[in-house]
Length: 397
Image 1 (cartoon, rainbow, N blue to C red):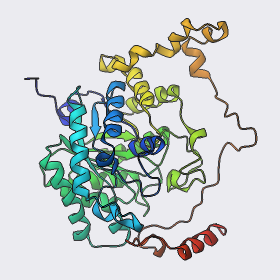
Image 2: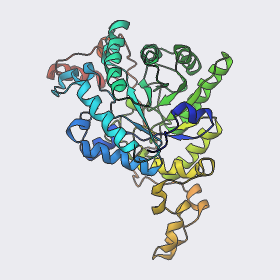
Image 3: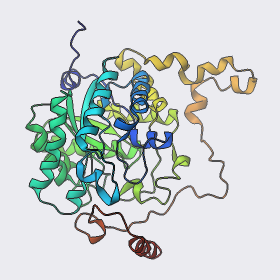
Image 4: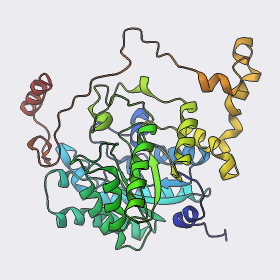
């Protein structure tokens, strides 16, 4: 029998770097297996080979955590706005757990079962109702014996606390990750206060994911850490940001950008940007470092390569990647061979090749959140009349 793997807390308590994976919904949408809009993970059942392959790419790139592809896999989300899949959350969650475990067993990776924010919370359902949704998902994760749990992609710390409280009932290690920036959650709760509430609820790992670029997310986690320390509490810290530059975002993050979700490619970070991100996160005391939307395997490999001295190894995928462009020494063109050096790539300022485009955008800034009529969710499909109202409203913002 293979020796038992060290758990997530055992690794973090020892000061090890844990590398997360990347953004499944965006990656699989680009590959034709996820529908933009609902962003639900039925591909775990419908296209298991695609999900399995993406897990394997992240594992090969250096990921230590295989997150189950269960983002937005609660029954209320699967039925939201005409999204009639004829699949239950339990079916999707079970399939996702099996795929993550299969690939995790191929390397030194752990399986994390994840839950996300719910339409029920946005529609002002009760705490008991929302917790019941989380509990239903967690029943599958316990049945499949995932290694730890993540409450991720929460815009409101109140709902994240409810998720953590349910997760603590399982006895599994709990991580909690909000999709917030330095201005705090959508009700204005600061990052530091958010972290304190999550730790007091029982989360052993806290941080942020999605909505903002790496450096913004690292800054937000720094604020969380300051709040936790000031409160006399202890926690480990995680960060799993976007792979997009977002200097022009407001509190809502990249969802407010006019390019979201189909025009974001010009904002993608290079692998060399990821080196800077990994080092910044490590220097901030963050030890669970991964990615979210926009992250591909080469981004994760860049994190693993930057932190190879601390981890004591390179990922398998580095056999096909020379350090800081060293593989270019073999190129046929001499001017390309001249780029086989670190200072070239560290100092490069990439051009977009789009002379008529601005460098930054103006976010939509509708300013609606939980409790607003525009955010009330429904099972029925959005009607043509409802869309026309939204089209008209968009012209005034």
